[in-house]
Length: 227
Ligand SMILES: *[C@@H]1O[C@H](CO)[C@@H](O)[C@H](O)[C@H]1NC(C)=O
Ligand SMILES: *[C@@H]1O[C@H](CO)[C@@H](O)[C@H](O)[C@H]1NC(C)=O
Image (cartoon, rainbow, N blue to C red; front, side, top):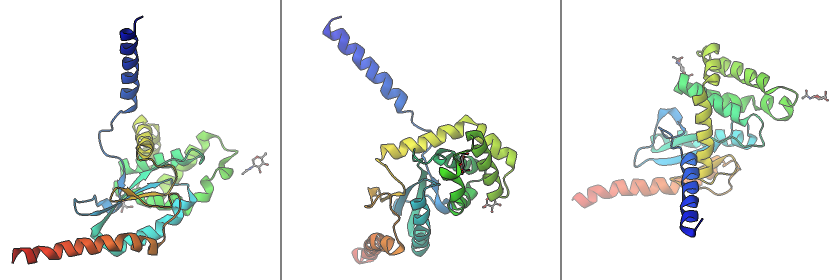
């Protein structure tokens, strides 16, 4: 084989690998808090959350409080990110996708339930259980939490390969953004420091207050310009 042929072969191999990796999903990943997607002038918080991660749990209340403080100026999208050293992270992230398909409004109810009852899904707590029985436990938990969803619908959601695919996409999306721990936050697309640690309410105010001031000032400038 001469060099030209070798190069051609190499580029074919590279092309094939790249294509199979970059299977682009048909819609953007993530769950919008309160069904409130970001507008062009929103302050956007992107959170990468592992539902069975204690630091993610501890990050949630102060973040929620901050979002309620700023109201419609801030939008939050949460991406499930399954840390490989949390045995049940992928299954619980998948449960979020399952419920999001059944009733999108219940997604955050389920996320909060995971935070509240996280201990039942830690590695040590499920060490002696088969994977099948943990899935069963999570199916029952999911249906119970989101009262209106039928157990059989949730079970069917877990058998649907599309929800497996969606959970993989969430994970891959985090990898593409350079996420390596949870919780991991981006504010208007820029990563916040102390990845993997919760941010306090005061911390959020410290990050967001200056951005809100800037926006308010911009809005006030317009009438002056028109005069
Ligand atoms: C969807 O979930 C929301 C929030 O939990 C609940 O209020 C609503 O009744 C649910 N809708 C259906 C059709 O089950
Ligand atoms: C798991 O099984 C081992 C051995 O039987 C036992 O010592 C341990 O307490 C069990 N752990 C749990 C969480 O049930």
